[in-house]
Length: 466
Ligand SMILES: *[C@@H]1O[C@H](CO)[C@@H](O)[C@H](O)[C@H]1NC(C)=O
Ligand SMILES: *[C@@H]1O[C@H](CO)[C@@H](O)[C@H](O)[C@H]1NC(C)=O
Ligand SMILES: *[C@@H]1O[C@H](CO)[C@@H](O)[C@H](O)[C@H]1NC(C)=O
Image (cartoon, rainbow, N blue to C red):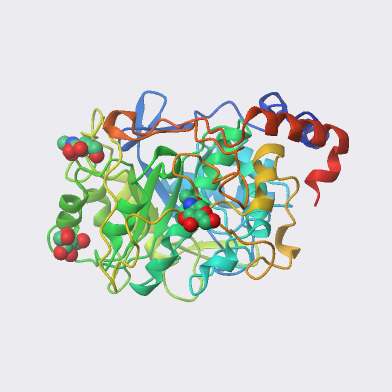
């Protein structure tokens, strides 16, 4: 029965998006209402009026760089939900999904268990290329990303989207940062223009000291349309036996104090010595909760590098020693009372100054504009995802040919920035209080919009399936 309702909804959604450009809020038959969507306030996450801390694991049986979709199989998903509940988790992170697959059953089972999803919207085949980012930021790539976002924004238990994962992994690769920021902007524009729920969007940074702070600042500077909703980084610096000061976590708290976005660890759990997960009691204590909102332990299943909490063999899942250690650490660690001293103001910061080779981005450089052929997805919807069988995007499609007008949300409207159809009616600027409000972005003059509407009414589905 559910399948029938879902496919009807899918058909209606496609129709509505394509021909009428109508909002699709009424067509989300698959979502569960039993779970409260997570929102951002100041530098924290909230579940309704309650502060929300991520207690999660990274979940990618098969390995994080392989093409597997761990939430596309309802049976293994439900099997593992029992473990998630036993561990006391409220969140999992998934690194790759097949955007042509059906995720209703798994996502609803997760929602019923009170578990949220943090989703990487990229896959190994559809992602930015850090060595040569410009050609990889193209319309074929964005169509894949938007199709994924479109599906998952409809689930109330999608907590956040990672617009990129470890794209920058040293000083020189910071040159790719404007592309990561452009993708983040584009995903936020997509949610806004398609009138989908404003699922928080941000980046997951590699565990590198050379430019962690600069990257965090960069993702939170400039006009509101170009800023992130949160920032996350991987951190393996607490290796038991250790402490808040020995690990250097006290210094990171100091360095990030005053940062205006929610911050969390997208991977943690150093395995140099026996893991006792003693960092858990620090992470959820008021020493850190003014600045951090929890984190995700790397990783659920053993994939050959000794980070696994469980061993999966065929249909059998066996707990490893680290499973018991993590469960014990979570069991004895509750969240702080009250709001954990979060920063209610939040807001933007100045762009970090260029400091090559560690940070090779000019603070005044404009972001690349969205590639022109991808603009139609913002207006008409992305259509279907091609999934894991797609050919990949790094060397295909049409590239960006201009820079974006800050505040326009979707770039200059076409490949020529002198077009009179370009307006910048979106966000003007930031200021602490204006901070996290999402502007509704208008990137075309009314006449262009009505022309587009007319064209899409005439040609209907043809437009979307290009
Ligand atoms: C904190 O910031 C200082 C100054 O920018 C930097 O030297 C130091 O490495 C940072 N510490 C950590 C742990 O990130
Ligand atoms: C709160 O965040 C704002 C904006 O980033 C910042 O200016 C302010 O110093 C922060 N306050 C505290 C107590 O950290
Ligand atoms: C607009 O285009 C001109 C040349 O076509 C270029 O020099 C300029 O940097 C562009 N400005 C923006 C904001 O895209």
